[in-house]
Image (cartoon, rainbow over all chains, first blue to last red; front, side, top):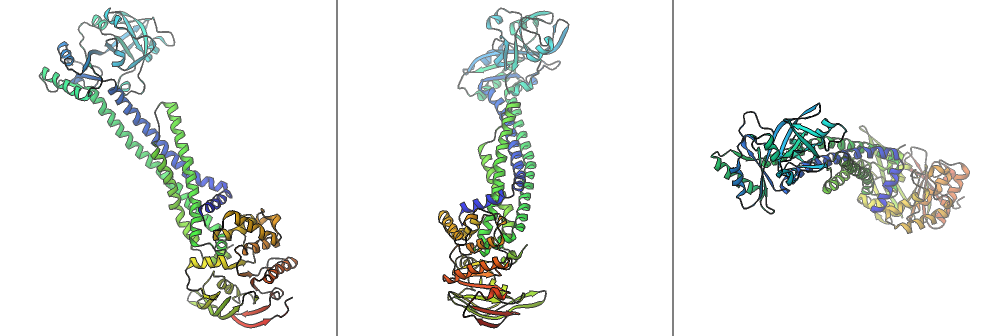
Length: 402
Length: 228
């Protein structure tokens, strides 16, 4: 008996009891779909983290901070921030360095009319947006001219704008920082899907470094942003600069590369995501196992129901392997169809997650292929016992079975 | 064609051995129409299962077409059954989910006959038993007599030398039963060997020879020179 004919028979048999075939298939369907959806979301989470790392390296920016301040953030009380002009000069002397900038961080209170808010203040050059990783979504970024002229202008984050101005237009409004009025010229949002944006607060105020020095004359830089030339090995350059700065400071741990810390945090998050995906995937695997048991159960029922048919087939010249094959193909058809439906559903869930949450959920194609092969194998494993049972029936008893 | 020598069959129930056939010697020649007759429980069905290669005797010898078949492996027996023996059962035994046509095709499916050829042959056989206009009906849409006609067409699918009929009219009224017997006689007249198992003398008289079995033993043989 050939495969074509066996398949035809299997589908005819499944079609004769559609509800049952569908429900049995549903077990495999749900199992495969949940595994794929979990893999898709887990993968998306990882891609997000990896994206955050690579977005840092693409920009060739090395963030160097005093060791006490290993993460970009707020200065601790009593902390000595020790980046000065000589440190900047050392970094700038490396041949792979394009430019060196200092940025200031700190907490401050801004006021607008009767409203005030605690904000994180960022001060830097005109390319602060790329250094601090935000994009201006309304209005404009301050220009080099603004910086040179010490203009009292500010870019505020979207969430700060919402707090101070509600739904009103913040552009052109005036806010006060330490008694000094600043004109709001732009509204900013963090760069998409950046780990940096998670580490940083959400109520942010960005001003030119010159303006900042006017307002806070005694404030020193909290971070040195070194931009590497294209094609330079950023990590090795970072290590060399940090080493040179530490020698200059006379303390082997005076400075640190905070982007390295960011990368290690990202790697850790990636690892955790992988473990979580595996654990939840294993739970979903139990669903698939239960589905497989359902298939075996239904195949056993089917063999019992069709005992007489099996006897008839044997009397017409069916060999044992014809009978085994018939039932195996039937159970494989159920699980393969369930597998295909499950893969389609899992991929669809991935697409929905991508559209609605922005997590770049995706299923690598080998996982899809594996899911299909696995569900077909469930058909073999769970169909084998019922099929052998069918083939080993005594044909005379089978013919008499009512 | 069929030669049984000292065939016995016994079943073990608990620690008791129950003999069903007690040494049957039977010879059926090519082109014969033989009726095996006996009351229920006489072992005639067991005899048919042995002749039809569905069951193995406890002891004895069975030659089919001059070759001993009892030592053959199961797959070989399946092929012999597929090619040489056509079964007609009392309860028709059509597969309920399959149309008349698909039922008739089934033995050819197991023989590996290509689809188109199979279909043509099945239609030809249904034509012969007068069922061609019911080819696409399911068994439960057919009357008893119609089902038995389909079953006969199916039994003939691979053009077997022997037709084995177990109470072929047992589930039919007298008139329909008579029609089925006429078909069997016509097939025999066309050269096919037919063996009918029955408890009904009217059916047995369709044959040229009646073999009487009682309690697993052949008790009498009756030759009808002029079959009714």
